[in-house]
Length: 457
Image 1 (cartoon, rainbow, N blue to C red):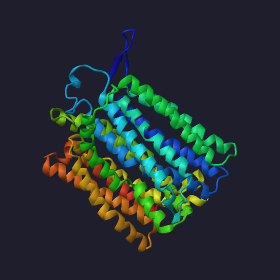
Image 2: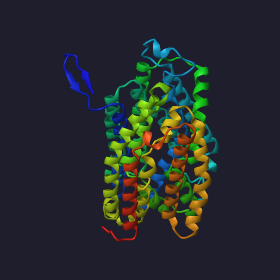
Image 3: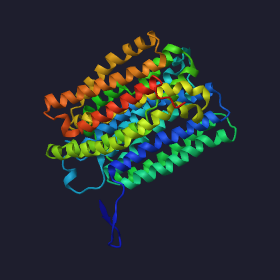
Image 4: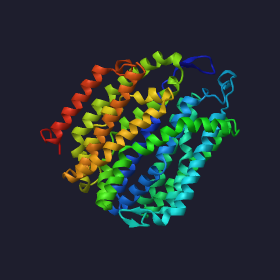
């Protein structure tokens, strides 16, 4: 793809909307991985690290479902909704849809902030009532951090792909410095939390600038109703199924009541960073393209090509990292986190369900109630299966294995729905032979590592 410069010359455009969002999504786990390494090499105890992990865990747990629902439902509605039906035809650059989505995010943030303060003395972590680490700062972080998740999507919807990359590079670099520098200077971990809040403030200034530049600041109750009608099933889907880290984290904290065990699990319960972020970025970036029936065939072919490219990159990368995981973990963190490597190995298998995208087609076609049904199916299996795995002696590894099983079942249900009800075959949007080959290969590698036939230690 090329673009014309002011001088009239043409130059290669290296970053499009999909790759821009993928690069941005990739920065977050990379930065937090570096932060985790600094934490384990610092003066912090494992209990201190557990408090930080619990702070981040609860902050995500209280917000991830409605942030996901509001943003994912905005993407297919942008310039394709009943309230502003003609906006896509009038050449208007400023969007009332984005501003009203911002208002919804602020409303949910304020609601969680208010309810959190009302019930903060009744929160319980590791079965000690009122023991949530730094609860007041946590609620302030929840209030401020959620609306700024809109920034990268404002750039996406306005085709400012390179700006997504710039925004991520600048703000995540600042975040790394403000969180790790206090520990390098020997300060308490609370100063790292202050650093996290400071960079969130920077993002708020950035957001206000973008809202003034790209949005029409008019309140539309009609659009918000339309937005919530589409988004509510997505919010409930995320709330019910959550993600591996939230569902599993709740089970681990409830069963073991030990912050050290929670830290072990959290350090291992990380998918191969490239997979989750690049897959989610591709899915979200493609959502607007499935919102019209006319482009369906073209969009299916596009997501097939894009997912094939991801498979060639991500499967070999994940396999290589799995082979080295038991060697890397005690050296990257410290020997106490050796147990985390076994959890990571199972989480690496989540690449198998992650790299197929039936949910993108379904949400793009605004059939969000189907994803809710899939989430209910996952919930019905995940919690009892996880508890059984613990009872059978598999411990935190069994919880991770349960998550892999339910993710596979959930994706199989969505694939079946597209095939049976919408007459969209898996081969229309999945490079099936390549996918099955890579899935079998990574499964074989996992078995060999698990049985220590391959053991790089």
